Image (cartoon, rainbow over all chains, first blue to last red; front, side, top):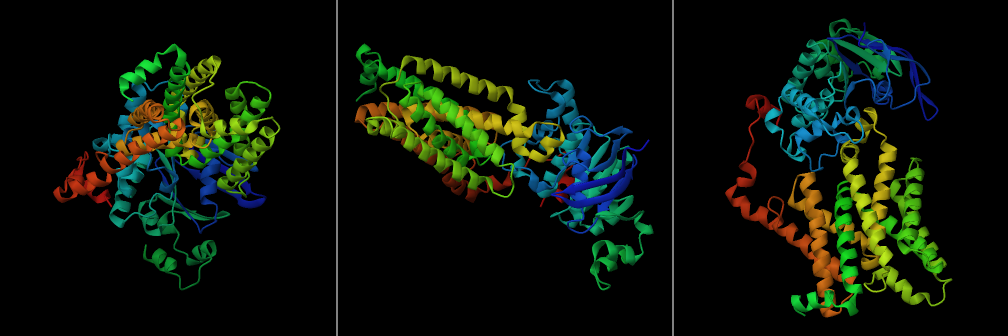
Amino acid sequence: MRALDIADLNVDLGGRPVLRDVRLHVESGELVGLLGPNGAGKTTLLRAILGLVSTRSGQIRVDGEPARRGRTPIGYVPQRHEFSWDFPISVEQTVLTGRTGRLGLLRRPRVADWHAVGEALDRVRLAGLRNRPVGELSGGQRQRVLVARALALSPRILLLDEPFTGLDLPTQELLGDLFSSLAQEGRALLMTTHDLVAALQSSTRLVLLNGRVTAEGRPTELRDPEVWKRTFGVSDQSALLKLVKAA
Amino acid sequence: MSITDFLTDLFNPDLAFLPKALAIAVMSSVVCGVVGCYVVLRGMAFIGDAVAHAVFPGLAVAFVLQGSLVLGGAVAGVATALMIAVFAQNRRLKEDSLIGVFLVATFALGIVIISQAPGYAGSLQQFLFGSITGIPDRDLYLVGGTGLLTLGLMLALHKELVAVSLDREMSRAIGLPVFWLDIVLYVLVTLAVVISLQTIGNILVLALLIIPAATARLLTDRLGAMMLLAPITGGASAVLGLYLSWSYDTPVGGTIVLVATAAFLTSWLFAPRHGLLTKRWRRPRGAAFGEHIPASDPSYDALCAD
């Protein structure tokens, strides 16, 4: 059974078609890189999976069941600027907020919740910083806090929105390694990114998106420059094509 | 006036309004201190100001009809908060423009309404700047009950309010009712404002929301500690402010706010970690920059540091 299976998805935003007939699946153990130009609908696709935008038609299934907002455990790692880093809260408490929905109103966290938080922190190797205020973390550490918060729900699928943006290359590489190992443990990861180098390096499969899925395959299978030119609307001389060729 | 004189006056049956004013000032400062933490952390100062102005037409109606000011203000404030939240769903206008519209419109409505009451000039000043006399006994219970309700709701919804304040998108994704939590927070701010109007007045009530919470934020990096320090700062400012106001015959609202401002400036300069002067004194020793908590895997962490 596919961890994430999207069939014939159509999404309109403000009366304008954003996603058309999108078919996409992610198996357990896969790290799928979602690439496309600005406005291609990458973030909209993630939001549709989370149930944050209404879809016009199509199915989104997680482990064979239709995805339902707040019910289906989906780990969501938003872009770093979505989070209020100046809030006076520790790393550990932040990760705990990932379980707020599951806890329900008027319930206090129990042993199982703290256990899940501890495991998530261990997993991203932030256990030593558990009491540090989030405002004092570096960019790479912040990204790992957001991953840990998503992992606190023990989800089988993780959605990552631009996790590499604004990070230097060594940090990107370490994060890519973390994502790869999360996939190898049996999770299904779908990641949007503008960072071609990191995507080519860490993804097991790439999906090119521009309103609709224009191509997909393993990084080595997507050598045809025409596909990239069509998806991104770039010229023959684009640095993007040189990157793809070199990969 | 010495402290003993103040205490004597406080228990003087002829001055029965004084302990009542003190109780109301302290209760409202404590509630505003706690609620103000969210106002400060979420950058809602302008909403707080709008709500403070929005209660004015309610007060005016209550004054004209001889009803409860607290109740009238609460109804008007909550109605305006709801309208701002609903109007804000239209993304064409930024929220601060909407708030600006409602702020002046409601205040204007209040002025027009209260001008219909004969001899309104004196009461207008009382609304705007607060007063310690003429507080009916039932307001004492109303303020106490409303304060407890506000604090109880904040405690009950603590983890949801924290999650939404941190990250709205993720909160929606995990199924939290973000819109309704916003409404609840607006209503809590309104209630805190309304119960503070009696003593501090319409114009200065924003100070009770912002200053103690801002002071506490400078003193700590823990939300729990902040929510404890802010009401302590607010409550202490109320007691000291009322004492000074009684001693030197100054307006009570203004005096309380000035005391709170002094507390803010003190913590801005001397806060243990973030104070301006504290930082300057620590810099030569380098301790502020040298402290480092080791991660579980130092090499990994060093690479992740920016």
